[in-house]
Length: 128
Image (cartoon, rainbow, N blue to C red; front, side, top):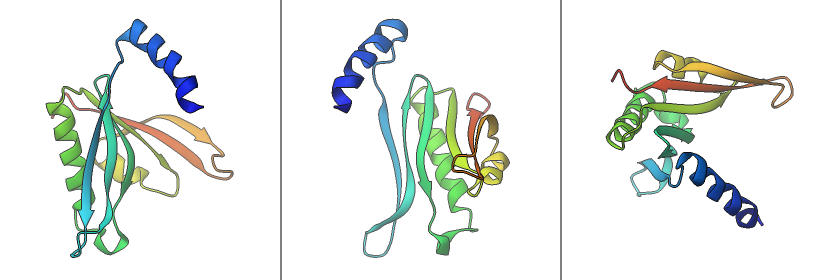
């Protein structure tokens, strides 16, 4: 179903803006047994890095690992020709962390989920 709905939309987007392809970007955190325990998952396309999923295991937080992973993703995005990065985060997650790394809020969805806000954030990669 999703493909049937998405295909004509994708074709239209390609005809209008040339947005034809994205490339996955993954930076993994593995434990001693090579099991994935966290990391960053996103994609690049249209000149932007979109960070879809980003989690640092609680036991590894506060050691600079999150900053390192996000910096690696941004550097890879620059190498892929991206000029910006964007992501979203909830009020109870890591907005302050992203702001410390140069992200700014460009949108807010209130009461999603009820009683909280979801923030949409972006960062220019041109100054790096």
